[in-house]
Length: 375
Image 1 (tube, rainbow, N blue to C red):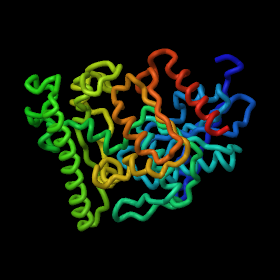
Image 2 (cartoon, one colour; image 1 turned 90 degrees about the horizontal axis):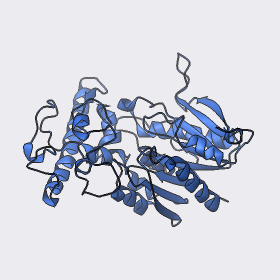
Image 3 (cartoon, rainbow, N blue to C red; image 1 turned 120 degrees about the vertical axis):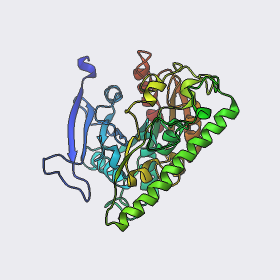
Image 4 (cartoon, rainbow, N blue to C red; image 1 turned 30 degrees about the vertical axis):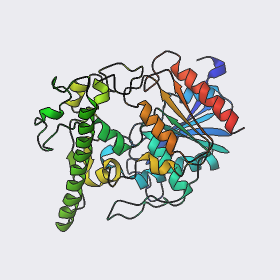
């Protein structure tokens, strides 16, 4: 990186209301603040995710080249998806926003909702605008959840429409027994040649209905199991969910066609990934399932929260994404309440690794948009 484009990185570790420093020394809220060398920006981005480490987010260095600060921020749930609780995560994001406003000298904060973080940052803005998030049944509200500072703009980048939505769209509808990953309904098996690809509209409709039914079966079990545990004096337990890489769109490129690589998901080959042990939502506590993954009970669905996002907003959709599709971007755009919003398609995969200039071009697009909206 040239001297002109060199950025400064500051590690930030902070306590959260109701949760202090750990005995080993770590803070629950941690991240890196990226700034242009020798500059104190008055406008900065903050990006956070449900569990992925965003401290060194791939856009951070690019945004500093345009004169902006960038706080790659992690909540207490970094790397701990199995125990995620939405209200506590929002409090931790609020710690980062407050630090930018009160300690870093930033006047305007832009919420960057990238990938899974799209619905999370929407939920933050929603709660900061009009408190609405409630704790999981049986738990007290997170300390500080009603005292959040609103962002000044919202950017949705390669974002999913919500954790329950994306998990359900990806989960294998052919599963017939949650205790045995080998059992499968051949009439719903994506890799049964009798079904396709290409998949008929009738098959896709049955498949989507079966996915929703599977999500609901797990939800019903989680609620019953939580009640059973409480009667025994226990608060929660962990459980696993398997076969979660089976979205028909990853197998059949004729469904929502775009520039994506056919027969591919974020982990590579969908069939191999579906039978493996890596992916989102595979290990949960009962409360985490109800808080994050359940279609019925989760508050991590973007659309209700986007209905409270009234600040300038932009939805950016990479045209070769193998997990976010044109209909997802449209859902997000349509749900945003702001009258000052736009949607743009860019060239690139989910992480903007290809083509070579995808990241710099997207950063330029965002920087130009911010300069116009927040000048």
